Amino acid sequence: MKIIEMFNKKRPVLSFEIFPPRPDVPLDSIYAHLEQFEALRPDFISVTYGAGGSRKGRTLEIASRIKKLHGIESMAHFTCVGHTREETDYMLKAMHSSGLENILALRGDPPADQPDFDFSRGAYKHASELVEHIRKVNDFCIAAAAYAEGHVDSRRLSEDLAHLKEKVDTGVDFLITQLFFDNRLFFDFIEKARAAGIKCPVSAGIMPIFKADQIKSIALKSGCSIPAKVVIMMDKYQNDPEDMRKAGIEYASLQIRELIDEGVDGIHLYTMNRPKSTREIMDSISLLR
Ligand code: FAD
Image (cartoon, helix red, strand yellow):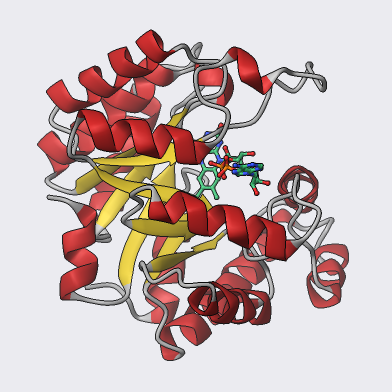
């Protein structure tokens, strides 16, 4: 099923994001979690694409299994950075023949060890070009990334919003935001996006805080800000992993509850492959169906 049809029928659409295990870790490690995620009955599960295309086969395999074996709609992430047109078409065909109907079309990030990476070496420089290409070759439901605080490469939010509008206009069905820890940033972003003419559904990306160091490094890379109350929380529990996890679950649950109360189109939970904590969040926001 195309995910956009879900948004046409109900709001909020609930989705989970998982990532494939490292190549040296058997796929069974994630397969064991899938049953537990299935029990939480999300509307769909998305599977990330390793930076620069690493683990791409695994993305396909896992996304296809979620749909076929667990009966839950899935979405494969796909990044075009560094890919030739032929490689891109090969992946799109492979996704299509695996029965996948939904794709998160992304530019991706340059390899961490190449700060001067030349984006023009790939066939597509921006996600909008990839979206345009996918629209021409088949009929996937296409999602794209949005940034409530602006993408880290953009000088201004207004600049990023203008590019986002161009991207949506090339054929995006719905958007998912990068993580954010202050709902006001999301609400302001939605107001600006709607004023700029972006009409498609926008799912709010929520990442629970489980480990302070992990969140700091993700925030640094993604450019998302960490509010003072989160800094205080991370300092308070830095020597107690279980209390940190519980506080992170509570914080994410409060964020989600408020977003739902304000009529958000969708909640996209970055599960970090943790079904137990995901269940605790679902219990706490009473979304368990
Ligand atoms: P784009 O939409 O191309 O935007 C990137 C930058 O270019 C922005 O600053 C934008 O304003 C600017 N820009 C866009 N168009 C133009 C133009 N025409 N001229 C000038 N500037 C322009 N990464 C992975 O490697 N694997 C994943 O699985 C993955 N999943 C993600 C899931 C979500 C929900 C999100 C939010 C991000 C994910 N990412 C993933 C990270 C993403 O790849 C990076 O944030 C990347 O840096 C940007 O990708 P994009 O698709 O947003 O790029």
